[in-house]
Amino acid sequence: MNFDISWLMGLHIPSGLLPQGLLWASNTVFLLFLLLAIRHAPWKELFNKQERQHVFLGAVVILLTIWGIKAGISPGLGFHHLGATMFTLMFGWPLAIVGLTITMVVSLLLQAPDWASLGINGLLSIVIPIIVSYSILKLTQKWLPDNFFVYIFVCAFFAAGIAIAISRISVITLLSVIHAYPDDQLIEESLQYLPLFMFPEAFITGMLITIFVVYRPEWVSTFDDERYIRGK
Image 1 (cartoon, rainbow, N blue to C red):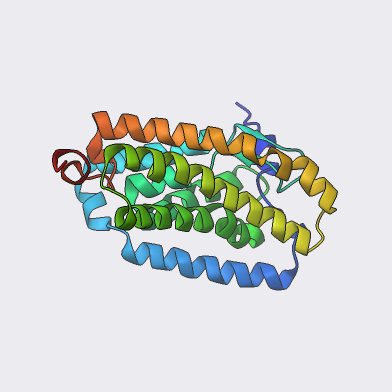
Image 2: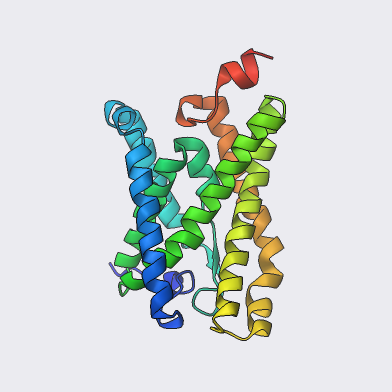
């Protein structure tokens, strides 16, 4: 059976568009983030709970499939569901970085591997949206009431939309600064469609997190029944 990999090409910024210095620097920085995530990930909890392992690996496989639903023409300008906020809420930021990195590595293996650009794509599509999602979660816990609907609408729905927006704006800004594409092409093929893709990211994340916290709250590590429901 042949696997159609054409959808991957629009999502990945090829190394040919980027300066060598930027590639080396981004690979180094991304490796540091990955090592930090590996160090802080709750491996003992993951390995001791078989159900947790199945949920984590299942989420990786599902996300890889969802990444196939994309829009875009030129390499690096494609839109797709990031899943960063969902992974952050379900597994915490360390395992979110690990899980999305596995997804990205597998996606590269399914096409002509362009390992030189793994770092820059990892920073833009993994690290940045996860940092945004985790920051919104912590700020919400600090400044907003501990409420079920606050968790769903702010930490999941709102955070997912903001995360993909900042991720894509970062990509567009980078490609503009290095003159990979004319600015009018960046606006025409990517920036003007950003609001249209923020809502699906937010809706899918909000919907799935709602289902999980209602029926499988143990799957969402950042959700606490006592904090958001029973203690009210």
